[in-house]
Length: 267
Image 1: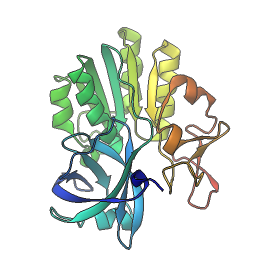
Image 2 (image 1 turned 90 degrees about the vertical axis):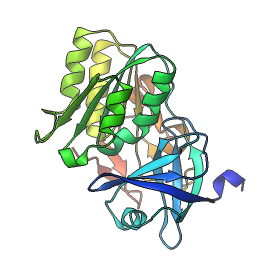
Image 3 (image 1 turned 45 degrees about the vertical axis):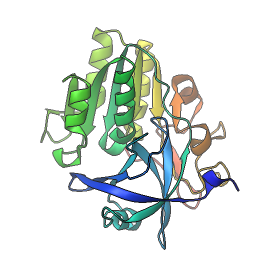
Image 4 (image 1 turned 135 degrees about the vertical axis):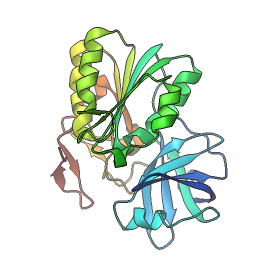
């Protein structure tokens, strides 16, 4: 077994509460990775889970919403505490285009933040369309506003912040009025399926970051298999382009639970 498949101990250098349910954990040691890649975070006695990187390079970070026993345990950690890290793994986003749109929802904004930073560094003009159920589920609002130079639209389903609605409504309007070189998306898969349909309608290239249950992160367990291609999210993704997405028949429809049983993806 190679070194990359064994947890390396990292010290937590900082913890930032992004909203009442979500925290970002900054690591004290640099971690070279591409935006869109992920790591496996290990807690002794709790196991390990995959986490998207919300920071790469000199300031690596991962952002976690507290939803279950593992993430609740993570949320108790403080600066100076230690975690085990495996990775980075997977294929990240390919940076391309001079005029791009980033469409995200909830904690799906996590991998889009370092992507936005890299796009801006490469000279791309970015537009950010960000959604969440409520104001209390938004993250990185000010950072994304600065990176996009205020070309940043926020929507909440209940209207508690920004416009009331969902990101795909704005995306369809934008693509009908202006030309863009590339769309990137991460968030609820039902939303990303609609992003796929819209970008296909207007002929704009798309890259989407998918999420599936996974245990090994190295292509052995098969839990993150995509039907009928046999592609593994951990190895062949998590980022897939438009042509690849067209071949994934369960995209936006079904996934596998920890037992391997096929289950519907929530709307």
